[in-house]
Image 1 (cartoon, rainbow, N blue to C red):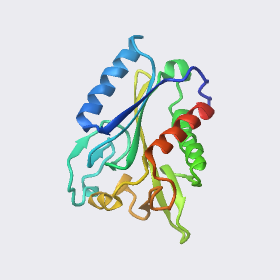
Image 2 (cartoon, one colour):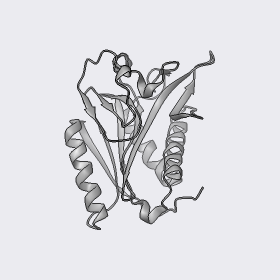
Image 3 (cartoon, one colour):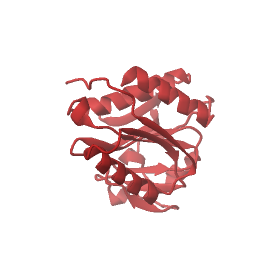
Length: 213
């Protein structure tokens, strides 16, 4: 597997409040097109959404159980997931033409980014073969998911990215089978008794980015 080479930090944007999902999709589309045209720099965009579900390209209708919130077609890889207040979403728009055209290496670096950031917040997370995202051991032979990854690449420019459960209402996951995985649960920093201050989490992600990318 090739490594993605380090380069200058991308632009770093934090949006206050709750960003509507269609607005975020349109903004990503525009930024990706501008990056492809050489008219904009790479971007990591941190935000929160109002409560909603998104369907990835592998989503199965049977995994949409009892949706209490709007459902959007995301166009990213993966299945159904939840976004909402208290969950930090990072949309990552990088030019892999400049960083190495290796999608698997890119996803691995996203995972490592989260691992390092969460370690700074006192949480040990694990990769699991066959399950994209990051997991926390529950202690009874099962895991709980704390962060999801879903990406899309167009002409080797990335968009979509990661979602990290800081302090969302975890009951909102009941409307779907998250990522198509029934045998494991979901958790958050707050549920683990760790820091749930969004600004501190944002700072940890920015510091870890410089270490990993």
